[in-house]
Image (cartoon, rainbow, N blue to C red):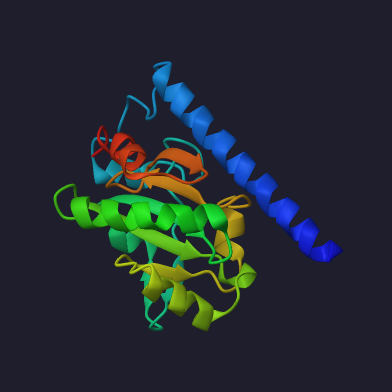
Length: 195
């Protein structure tokens, strides 16, 4: 019983932290703080020459992971599209709250706004591929789901609190990092001023 109570307290605290982070993000935007750098790379060769890193203006480090059907996908496969790179797990309540918003946003905007959602499951911390497969089916996730089986990519991208998302422009340059769940309006706002 004590372990169950402790687990519930931890989950409530994580949810509170996620809510605070989202509220702070909204507050920053309401105060007029820019959500994206004003300078953008003018050509893909410039983006290639930019340093790879995790800060705004850096080219997101490339990686290759397997999908649920065993195919390999690299982040660089999505160049030419704006990308929401999302780190999540099936046991995460804020992730469960965010996924329906992502599914709706994707259905309404993927083609018209040239945007892709790349959902990286933190498989090393999750409950196995069958649980992930059931979750993806239950939530009707139409976008690519990649499996971070070793946990390397989530660690590299600093996805310690989840969900964590990176907003990338069509050249693979990081424009924003969001810790906590997003809704459709927030995703639209984050993507509207980037190419």
